[in-house]
Amino acid sequence: KEHISEIEAFQARNMEEIESFRIKYLGKKGILNQYFAEFKNVSNDQKKDFGQAVNTLKNAAQDKVTALKEQLESTQEEKGIYGDLSRPGEPVEIGARHPISIVKNQIIEIFSNIGFNVSEGPEIEDDWHNFTALNLPEYHPARDMQDTFFIQTNPDVLLRTHTSSVQVRYMEENKPPIRTISPGRVFRNEAISARSHCIFHQVEGLYIDKTVSFADLKQTLLYFTKQLFGKSKIRLRPSYFPFTEPSAEVDIYWGLETETDYRITKGTGWLEIMGCGMVDPNVLQNCNIDPAEYSGFAFGMGIERIAMLLYQIGDIRMFYENDLRFLEQFKSSI
Ligand code: PHE
Image (cartoon, rainbow, N blue to C red; front, side, top):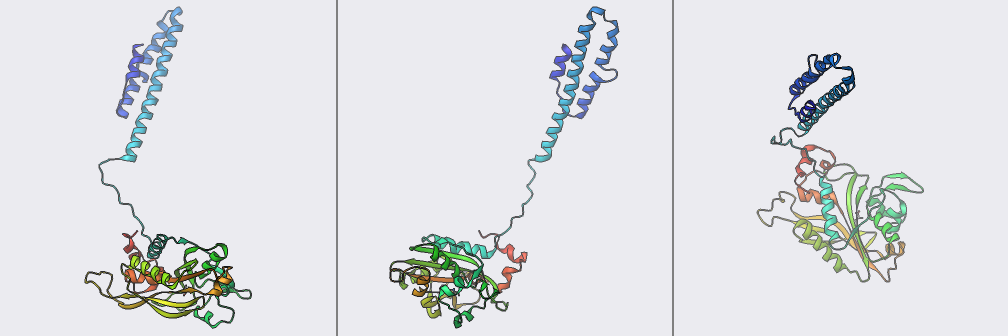
């Protein structure tokens, strides 16, 4: 009995202590073997009780040794995981968002603040959504403005040349009022250079309601450029797009306004940032919206071009080369 309570109370701090405990009870000259040796001297009527008691003791000692070992191992494991808690942490490599994503998210945020939602569509398009519905019938010379990658001809299947195709899909599926922006990848069969690429990104916007006017368009553009660039000295130059009438190109004045304006190092003056206009009544009609009841404006911009301005990037190819020296520079951006 005394042995049992001693066994129960025993605590070990390390393997050596467990081992000497084991030897003390279960070793060759240990307490248990001494009892077993005495067994033959015990009178017959006590043999049964004595034997049971010794066996209980033996089991208790063996169980204790196993338990102590397990306990020690688990505390060692924990130490292995947590180690020295005062040790300085190892730095975790954090990636950076791609500048195209950063700028795209900024544009989405700015327009969602004035009630625009985000719409998406397929990159592989049919002729209707990319051209015909947008007032660009077959053989229309304006189709040449956008050098198209065809996947199949007759019927035409192609890589979309602009995300205006998403606007067509959106108008077909939703009733006005419509306020939506369509970010996405677009494709044009253009020679790759510092200024243009065959794959790039656009955000196009569409607003359709009763009595939407050109003044609404201008005011929206002023708000947008002010939010994104922190300035909004813009001008609208008359232009032509088959899907808008009247159409304009938007220039932003990118000049040295304060000496501390860190963004401005080169490329100053009036710089084109997007195309826009009032949605052509034919386009509304094509999408089952009554032009007698509704009017709207649309605009479209290339994300790369905007990002090149904001970050003073001189070569569009940098966006697609995945050079870590380039990408790492955007780590502090959200
Ligand atoms: N879809 C035109 C382009 O890709 C941009 C644009 C959109 C122009 C909407 C006017 C209105 O160049």
